[in-house]
Length: 164
Image (cartoon, rainbow, N blue to C red):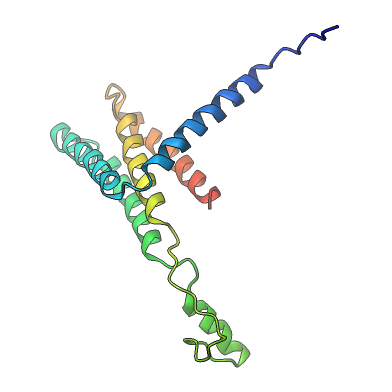
């Protein structure tokens, strides 16, 4: 006797579709990993198109300014080390041990590791520009576009922080 399969709940169906779309997106990201130059050209082209749209429309300067701050924040995270050696030196001086470069063969050498890798920097920058451009596509509601950008930028930033 075959037992009837339980019906799938709407939440389970949405979760299944979301995970399927996430796997497809991740597959495309994995395929684009070796193409650094093309990835940056695409991000630059999207940013240039957004800038042209701002200049031609002569509006949404505050949104462009907010996007600039977001991109600057990403750039600074890209330039900073993941482990700050100056903080570790200060902690070592409090204990009485002086920090510095390794002097013996058995001491560990730690190379520079970025807080935000290049791949994530490029993807987050392109996603941010596309997100803002998509939000501003509907110019019927110019007043609420700033609010939409703030809320969506906050959600994107929280997602980036949680994925670390």
